[in-house]
Image (cartoon, rainbow, N blue to C red):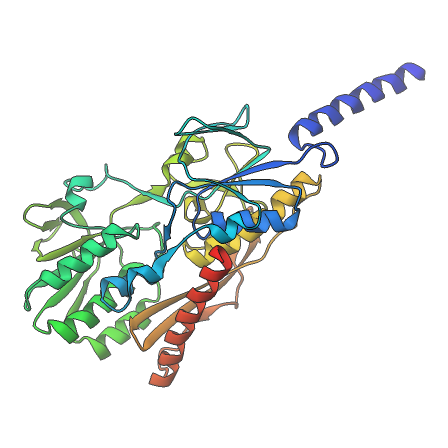
Length: 422
């Protein structure tokens, strides 16, 4: 009887030691959490972690001293907004006693739980959160590489590419042709190419009315399609043409010097070409071993912990989040759920199953907004739509309703930017 008790004691001691390795005792040490990526997901998560427990040592790794936001960058391209309104720093985050490492993560060693930065610094962690956003896949579309992007900008990473596309539109003569190539799913911001088409069409209508805009699409359908197309018929008849994949819209190769795009059915010559190429999770995801063969990161939706690497969580555009789209709102919502889950795990508790929401506003014109909303829960191990929840703007809404949604879009951006960056 005594020997059995001793065996049980030894087993219990071993289990306790293993648990101590997996989740350090809050009474003995301050848990170290490293967050890589300072966008709407990573910056939000860092702040939420710090607020969840002031004992957490939180380090945010972000090489850029200023973050340039993608939401509303289409308005910059159309000349409706200054890019300075898209830029945010990290002073408010530092003020919350979060360490901001202005460097790039180079290596992640999951076994030793260590991040090595390009400058040589090493960060040990108990939990790691990756919010790396997207990386462009330069190996998929023949003819399109980083050199070609200097002539046919993608503008899908906000900043200099945004301004380059804007300058090209300004320089184009009236009567020119703008071509946007939209990728197959999945990609960052599903309605983004169509909002961009709308706002460029608005600019052309105002400033270069003899011009033409063509959207070549690698899909046969897209987010908020009926709303966008109804608006195009009303606002931009004869100016904006959408070519679906079935009708030869998928671009199969490009020639940057001649600004030519080839599809299965035709060749298109543009004065301004905006190529939105295929994408994948940001580079550090593959380095950390959390990206699968799709290039994206499978996660446990209850905690956003990687299904491939323990103690590593992935949020935002990089994650495979089921029915939840890749958007700033989604990244912000996932960041809060992830922070709660990490805090629970570090306190030895089980994360609670979350319910998440996403709302996405798009501008078709400065005073014409449309929206889509979704609610998501865990079903069969993935995030799925909650039936009957969410929805889209009414198709037959009056002008004052569209103007109200445009103002809601502006208010949403101000709110999320303030919440994320202070």
